[in-house]
Image 1 (cartoon, helix red, strand yellow):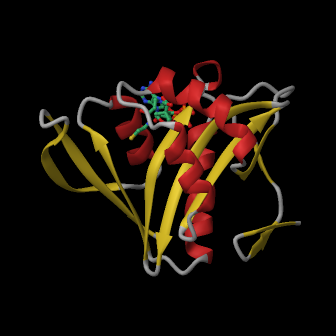
Image 2 (cartoon, rainbow, N blue to C red):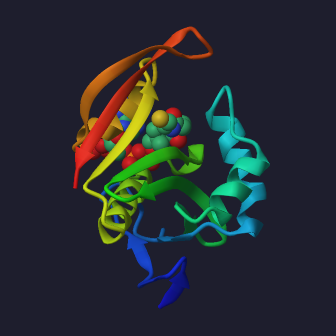
Length: 167
Ligand SMILES: CC(C)(COP(=O)(O)OP(=O)(O)OC[C@H]1O[C@@H](n2cnc3c(N)ncnc32)[C@H](O)[C@@H]1OP(=O)(O)O)[C@@H](O)C(=O)NCCC(=O)NCCS
């Protein structure tokens, strides 16, 4: 069992139908020493990536719960969750290109939802670029519904879709 920000929980192992049998991904809390690998994934995944300070903040902030998935010694993906009282929020999620389409993001989302429930949240919210078809499909398949649009939210140009899932 691992202690982290006041909660105890067992290790979580990802098993997905798209994952080779030889591959095993574990989900655990993000650590400072993960950040170098995370930044490589972040920079390859987003046109406006988070910087190192963002991840350092998430690791230390009392209402933030960042997790990584790990295959062998490599970070395959990560998710940054913020959970305050009844509302949780997904702030960032990405999977390394070589590990995509194997259920890693779905498992990270499920893990974040489970953690939010344990923390007393009643819903999880997020926002996503309208052009990000893969992410919108991931969220819809995971049970999120569209709750609104934030016009020209990204760089004053692109709309954000607001999504929510009841826990
Ligand atoms: C979006 C992202 C996190 C998905 O990660 P992933 O591990 O490949 O996703 P999963 O394998 O768990 O896929 C789960 C579901 O998402 C959907 N999905 C994932 N990638 C998709 C794609 N390229 N096109 C369409 N649907 C996709 C599918 O419905 C899939 O379910 P299925 O395999 O049963 O069809 C990944 O593509 C990524 O890191 N993108 C860059 C970062 C990003 O955009 N993050 C989201 C910010 S809001």
